Image 1: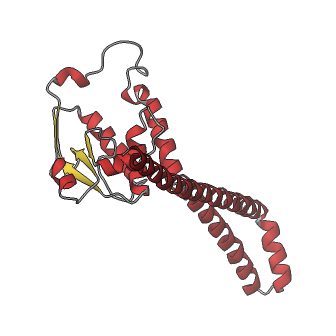
Image 2: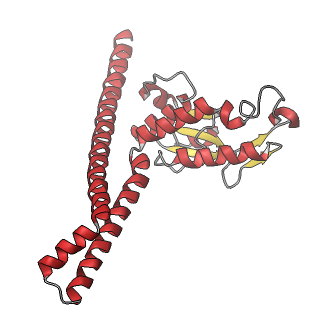
Amino acid sequence: MLEPLMAGRADLTLASPYHSEGVVKNVPAFRVWLSKWGNRILSRAFKSGVKTVTCVVRGYTRNLMDHLELINNGKDFHLEVLYKAELLGFKVEEVPAKLVWRDKSRGKVKRQGNIITRNPLFKMRKEILSHLAFNFFSRPQILFILPLLFLLGTIVHGTISIAYAWVDLVANGQNITQALRTALLNGQLTLQIVVGSSVLFFVLILFLFLALQSKKYFEEQYIQNARINVRLKRLQKSKGT
């Protein structure tokens, strides 16, 4: 953990059991699966490509700690540290780690409550929701990409269907204008779906643009404020000496 910090290769080190050289032992399979997939989803919010975003065993340089201004004291604290460290341009490095549960019964579900309340997903619902909200804040496009692709596919498919019907009518000898009118009348439902999907598509594009602009504004403000705070700290130290 300390070697990359002391060598100057990193400002923040993460102990990662999911590193290619990491080890996971005696941990229930479902918990490992849930943790790995959760980290895969969360890692898309970061530029460094770390595999274990949720690890709490970390190493920090004093320079990094002087620059960070943190407000979270909950489960998202470790995400905030990594996000803001990357935002300020600090180097992050993962170190292979061993995650070994000595008590094998630790992960077993106690027979209390019904089947829903005993479910690990239900117990971790608050953490899962807060992490997903963080993912949306840091990468808004993640939330919008699937709906946008679905709407775009609907628009393209509907447009091609109407165009194909129109070309078919023209090929059968109808006037171009009359064929277009007939194709639109016969495909009224398809046309309505295409129009509705187009409206929703552009509304989502607008929301995505606003979300990206809001994120960009926040990042610029945070970087500026962090630099000001560091300079103020240095001034205070110089006055104290």
